[in-house]
Image (cartoon, rainbow, N blue to C red; front, side):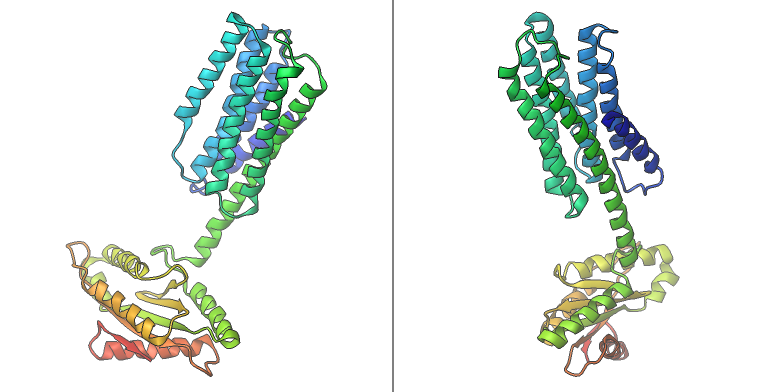
Length: 371
């Protein structure tokens, strides 16, 4: 039953692949993985119909490959280097070892050790990958927990064969331990399939959240996102007295750039400008696109003097950036304000920073003014 449900999960993952954005990578590998695991179960069922060595080797190969595809899919999702060559070599080595201890030196116990140990290594590697590179959401933590449990079952099976089995034990000999192992492993494959489906869903949600809060051209936050963060800082200020500052930046004569060099060049100027501003910010600071060539920077825990120093570094950095044939030299005017007692709303801070910005533009541009 777990195998049949695994087939359904594989088909669901493959079907959803076309509905998800291209940035959600690994869906094809994830969808193929449970299908191969289920195929191995079906192939094991041909014992007595096909030669036992063929059933064992092909079934083992399908299961090892299926478990590896789960790992490779997660590597693609998190943009990690693919390890398929490494694991292909490991799988081939394991199958060769199983073949040797099946025909040359028959010993069922060593075959179980090799097969279960190889599976455990693949599963443990997958769990470590999710622990290191997965986000803090529920799905990667749930999947990693299932994988560690799966690895524990495999290790227990590998160790238990040393005293529960004999060298000539048949692969499909019924026993409580063998039944428990097969049931636990099959159920864990189903849970891993559910886990990777949840991981894909969480990544899609994160993608939409990012698109909703970030400007598609520059990668800066949207105006709404920055203003919401300003409102939060204003609440902290009113409760705890945590000061903060606000900057409004306007690229000087940006319309001339578009008129003289074209809108594509103007887009590149905006991207370069955002990269430069970001290089002067801390992780807690927030840069947003206020509109057109205007940007807004929120500086938590920053007084007026520190905010003006940050703004001056940004202005000087852009002014010192030489122009090229594709990216003309540009300057920026910046208005700075710091929260004051009695500021009722974020709009009051924005208006004060905006006034300071227009003072900077009126006095010749390419300068910083505080309001």
